[in-house]
Image (cartoon, rainbow, N blue to C red; front, side):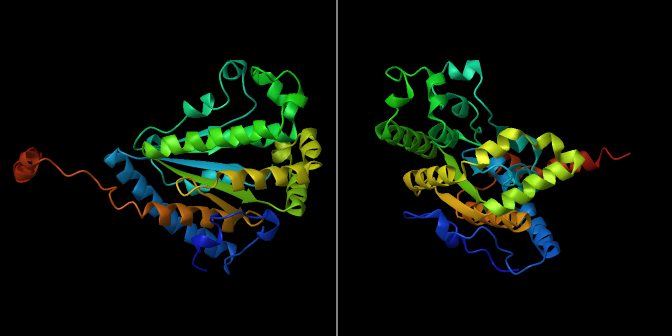
Length: 294
């Protein structure tokens, strides 16, 4: 299996999504990819334990992609070896009435991971510059002063929203949140095949909605909005990674590899040292426990 080159996927300058591949095998079979993921996943689980003990950083992982891109299964497979109390997954759907009673970032802010924990956002605050750009009428439900009709939503509105998102991410990064943003880059043909599988497999039927086809018809608009969002918000403290998503096994290995290699750079994340008094008495505690043996 090829070594994952992080720079191949990390966005550090303006990009065109059409220049990025949607498929890779990493020169490995599915069996080899699954085996490779197991090793990376185990190391990530160990890091999570250390992060929890260190208790000064949190990790936020944002996952975006078109329908059928494999977000749910990626989360299930990559974080399988994590302690359940150390990772929290939030799947953001259509805003509730409670959420619409606040600004659009509120529901994401209150879901941020606490220090020592991983948080995974399955769909994220970026829906507010993706779905709402394709369907600007949704913005009217936010009841924003000065926005009375769709024609009031101009480019300046979206530029401000990108600025607000950048400010939000800068703020949490400066306060100890390590941010990863992954776009699962799926081809339109692979989405077609996956939708057909949903229809063919009875156990997958529940995932299908006629609305999937309506959104699919807007494929080009979504690709443009994703490209804009990535270009406007990929920053050194909150980088985007464009991950080929047509091969689910390879996608998972790449995402897990990015997480592990980038997190290893935080050399200050270590288990806390025991107090000198406790260290000095380790043998005493050991003898006390051993003396209790029946």
